[in-house]
Image (cartoon, rainbow, N blue to C red; front, side, top):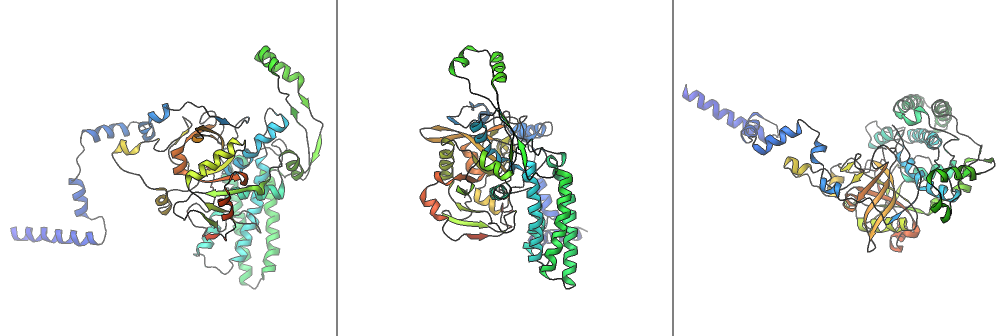
Length: 486
C-alpha cells in the first residue's frame, strides 16, 4: 500500500513538472501559489478597505491634490465650456475650441459656440464615402487581411484627428451653433452610428456581390452614389440638413472703461450692458464665407508634433489610412522629445494661441478634482505592487495611446519654464473645476502624445524635418486609428 501511495505521489510530481513545461496553470502550480501566500495584517487591512470603498478613493494621492493653487501666469480668455455629451467628437470640439476665443475676442461677444452638428454631418458623409472607396480598393482582399480589418473597424466611427477638422473646415466651412443646433442623435451617437454602419455595410456587401458577378469599378462607383444618397437622407433625419446659406446677426458687448468698472455695482453694470449692447444687422453667409470673415485662422500654418519614444526622434512619420476624406493627406507628424514639445506648447500659449492636443485620459486624472498628475492614484502603495512602465513599453504592449483631444488654454511659467497647464475639456461644466483641468508636467510627459501648433512657434530644425519623406506606420499601429473620442 505504501509503495502504491509513494508511486502515486511520484507520478503526480512528474506530471506536475511535465505540465508546467507546457505553460498550463496546473494543479501543482496552483498548490504552490496557495501555500506561498498567507494574508498578513497589512493585507487584511487592504482587503477590508478595498472591499468597502472604491480603489480610486483609497489610492488618491492627497499630497498632489492639496498642492495646487489654481493660478497660471499665462491664460487665454474664453467664455463657457462645451459639452460633447455621449458622442466621440472630442477631436472636433477641441478643434473648434482652438478657434472660439478669437471669435469671442474679435467681436466682443458674451459667448459663442460653433455648430459641431454641422461638421458632424459632413464628417459622417465623408467617412461613408471613404469607406466605400476603400471597399472598391480592397475588393479582392481576404476578409482576414489587416487593412480590411482596420477599414471595417474604424472608418465609420466618431473618432478623428486634427487633420479631420482642417479638411472639413477647408471644404465645408463652419456655422454658429444656433444655425444648426445639437439634436438627440448628435449628442447620443451610439444608435445612430450603429444604424448607419448597418446601412453602409449592407450596401457594401451588395456592391461586392455585384463585383463578383462582373461589375466594374465604374459600376461600383455608380452604386456608391446611390448609397450616399441614402446616407444623406439618414443623416438629415438625425442631424438636420446642413445649410448652404444662412442669415445671422450677433450682439457685441462693449467693454467697460476703468471708471465704470470702479463705480458700478455688479447689478448696475449688468443693466448698463443690456442698454449698450450693439446689435448687428442681419447678414447672409455661406459656411465658408462665415469662416473667412469671423475666424480666418490659417489652418495650413499648423503642424502636428508627436511624442512616441518607441520611434526615433527627429524623424517624419505618417499613419496610414488616417483621414476622413477621400483624396486628402493622412495624419503625419515629426516625432520629438517631450521637453521640446512642452517648450513649443508654452510658446504658443504665451503668444495667445490655444493648443489642440491628444492624450491618454484613462489614467491618473480626476474628474472630481480637475487634476491630471502622474501617479495621482497610487495603486502601487495601496496594493504593494509595481506597475511602472516606460512610455515606449506602453506603446509596445498596447497599454498607452491617445484616446481624447482637449485644448491647452493656459500655462504657469517659472523662470521661463512651464510648471503646469490649464486644460479646457469638452465634458461640460459639471466635472473638473467648472470644466477645466490642471495638468502637471509629469502627466504631460507620460500621457500627451501629440500637439498641434502654428509653425511660427516651432524651431527651424523641426520644421525642416517635415521636408523628409514620411515613413509610413500601418493603420494598426497603436494609436494610429485616431482619437476614439472619450
